[in-house]
Length: 211
Image (cartoon, rainbow, N blue to C red; front, top):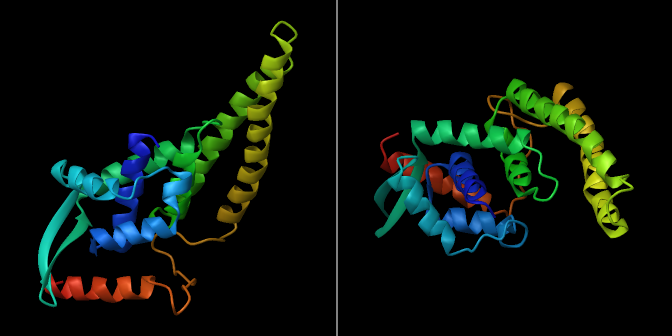
């Protein structure tokens, strides 16, 4: 996983649940199975949070909660700016060989508003439309070895499949489906989901922070 994708993942997780402690972020990301599809080492999550704090993108509060010390994280203004930048890069940059950034950004769609989502996804569609003719030419080449042209058929098929998916995705967003920033969020997790405890902890952390 590229470093900028890891930054996006951690900043996004904090933004979704802040104020939130490091263990909660680790548990939530592991429930997303990021160790499998994003190849994130669970132990690297804590060092990543520390790095982002040193860079000024996160602020760390050391609280005493129920008699125990806990480190709680929130986004700073620069962290929000960096998050927005990374989401834009991930949604608009087409890489048919590595879609990790796209998958991370899609999981963070509730953090951006609907017009921004339409703008970024439309830019991605234009980028795909620019790329596909090139891939078609390479895959249909008669000057390269047969095994090379055959191998290029795979990214071409991926690109065509992504384009079909992206057109449907844009239709959904434009028609009012899904949920985005500053919109009512009708979905709720099941009663046994750890997210309920995270929400209770968040309210307690806010109280400890005087919010």
